[in-house]
Image 1 (tube, helix red, strand yellow):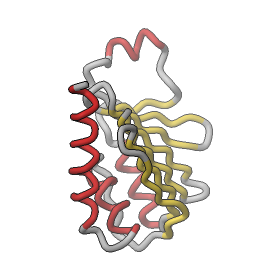
Image 2 (image 1 turned 180 degrees about the horizontal axis):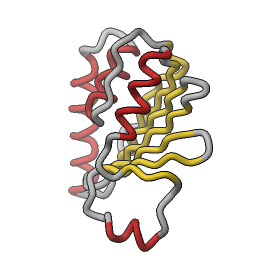
Image 3 (image 1 turned 180 degrees about the vertical axis):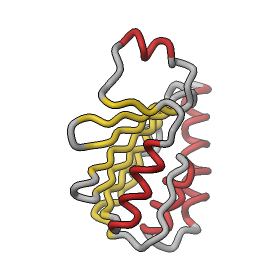
Length: 140
């Protein structure tokens, strides 16, 4: 029961925090800033959705400029635990206390965020050929 109240409180506070945002662009920027991703140029919002009260989900999909695309790739590649290809399970176990993992596989970059309360998941896909970024924040 206590867990339900904490989720309701968290969702309420989150809603209040973002109610001051006047646009989808500001909301997207605030979520990306939280995960150490910054964009300098204007971007096109394809999707920006929040849903749920006890299971809170924020999802966005944006198209960035060429210069921001290059900067994003550099930001991802410069992360401490960046690797090409997905690591084997054994390597993941060795990095279980890592805040962030970043990978490049095929044609996309994937960034995953650990060490948050177990109910919170954050992930980002970036497709440089399309200049498309997809971000999900999920609190179950």
